Image (cartoon, rainbow, N blue to C red; front, side, top):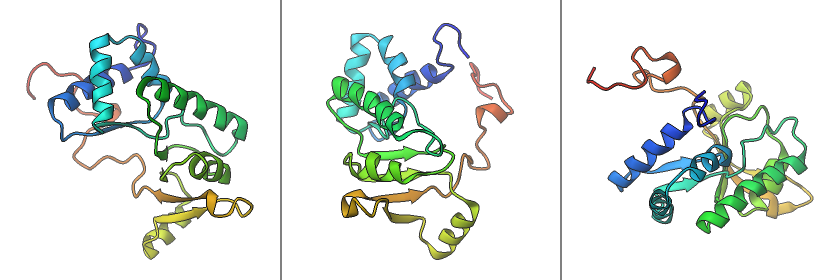
Length: 194
C-alpha cells in the first residue's frame, strides 16, 4: 500500500482513468466504492474536479452501487447496509447531482433479500448485478440461459421490491492473454516498450 496516499494504487488507477476518458470520448468506466474515490477526490485540483464532473455528465464515468464500500450481504445488519450506502450516495449527490441507477455487488459472500428489496428496487435502481453465487445455481442457470432474472425479493413488498438482476458469467477471471498485476510476468509500470 502506498503510505502517502493510504489508498494503495487506486489513486493511480483513477488518475489514469480520468486521463484516458478525457482523451477518448468512446471510453467508459464505472466506479463502485466511494471510500477510495472520495480519498482521491479530496486531493484533486479544481481543474481535475471540473473535468471529472464533465465526464460524469457525459456518461463516460458512472457510479454504480455507490455505497461507501461494497458490503458483505451474508452477515451485515440491514441498518449498516443502508447507512453505508446512504453515506456514499450523499457524496455522489452533493458533488455530481446524480444517484447510481445500478447495484453492483461483485464480491459479497452471499446475497440477501434485504439487498434486493430495500437497497435496489426501493432505492430506484434499474438493476442489480453480482458475481458470487452457488456453483450449482450457476451451472443450472447457464444450462437454462437464465443468468438474468427478475428478483422477487419480498412477498410483503410485492412488485415494488422486484428488480432486474444478473449473475456475471466469470468471477474475477481475466482473459487468458491478460496479465493481472498480482500474477503479471512483466513489471506493473514500464517506461520502455516490452
